[in-house]
Image (tube, rainbow, N blue to C red; front, side, top):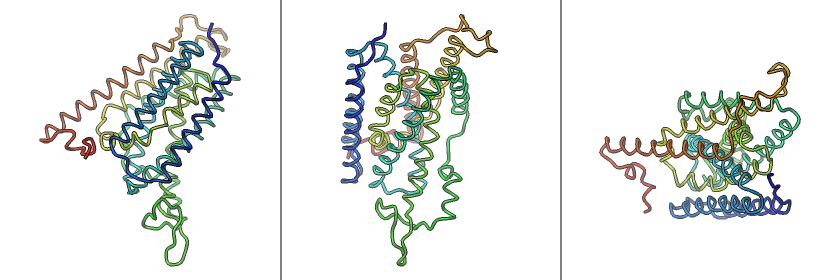
Amino acid sequence: MDLALPLWFEIGALVILTLILVADLLIVFKRPHVPSMREASLWVAFYVGLALVFALLMLVLADAEHAGQFLAGWLTEYSLSIDNLFVFVIIMARFQVPRKYQQEVLMVGIIIALVLRGIFILLGAQLIENFSWIFYIFGVFLLYTAVHQAVAKDPEEDEAENGLIRLLRKRMRISPDFNGSKLRTVVDGRKIFTPMVIVLLAIGTTDLVFALDSIPAIFGITTSPFIVFTANVFALMGLRQLYFLLGGLLERLEYLKYGIAFILFFIGVKLVLHALHTNEVAFINGGNGVEWAPEIDTWTSLGVIVVSMAVATVASVIKASRDARKRGHTLSEEIPHLVEE
C-alpha cells in the first residue's frame, strides 16, 4: 500500500521553494548582468541537485512510487520547459532585448509561468476528481500536440508577434528603445511604454500556450496536485541560467522537438489506456473498464522519458558538430560562449 507524504513535508517544501524563488528574484533585480558559463553551470547543477535531493526525501518519507512520479513529472516538465526556452530565444532576438536585462525578463516569465500552471493544476485536479472521462480529453489533446510538434515548422522570429502584440503596437505608444528594464520612459516630455512591455506580454502569452500542453502531460504521470506543482517549480527553477548556459546551442538541437513529441505521444497513449482501464463512459464498453487496456507504470514512463531526451539531445549535438565540421569549424567555434573566456 502506498504511503502518503507527511503534511509537514508538503507545507515545508512549498515554503522553502517560495523562499528560494524570492531570493532568486531579488538577486536578478538587484544585480542585472550576463552570467558567465561557470556561474550558469553552477546554478543549473544546484537546482538539478536540489530536485534529486527532493526525490530522495520523498523516497525516504513515503515510497518509491512517489519518488518515481516526481522524477518522471520533473523530467517531462523540464523537457517541455527547454522547448519553451527555445521560443524565449526567438522573442529575445525579435525584440532585441539587451543581454544585460534578459535575466529579468526570463525571471518575470518564470513567475508568470508558475502562476498560470498553478491555476491550471487546480483546475485539472478538480476536473479529474469529478470527471474521470477527462483523461480521454487530455490523452487525445496530447496525441494531437505530439503530432503537431513533430510536423510543425520551426517558428520564425516574426511569429513572436502574435495578434495581441500587433494590436497593442497599434493602440499604444511604444518608445523605439529600451530604458534599462523599465516599463515606462519619458520621450519629448510624455510618459510612454518601452518595448519591455511588449516583450513581457509575448513571454506571458507563450507561457499560457505551454501551460496548456504541460499540465495534461504531467497529469498523465501523477494525479497528486502537490507532485504536479513541485515538479513544475523544479523544472522552472534554474531555467534562466539554462538559457545563458545553452545560448546558441539551443538552435542547434534540431532533434529535440522530436524527442519531446515522442514523450507527449507516449503520455497521450498512457492517458487513453488509463481512461479505458477505469472507464465510466456509458457508450464505451457499457460503462465498464476495458480489461485488455494495460496500465503503464511510473518507472516505465520514467525510462521512456529519459531515453527519449537522451537520444534526441545526443543525436542533435552529433549532427550540429558534423555540420560545423563541414563548414570548416568546430561546434565551440561557432558557439563561442561554450568556451569560457
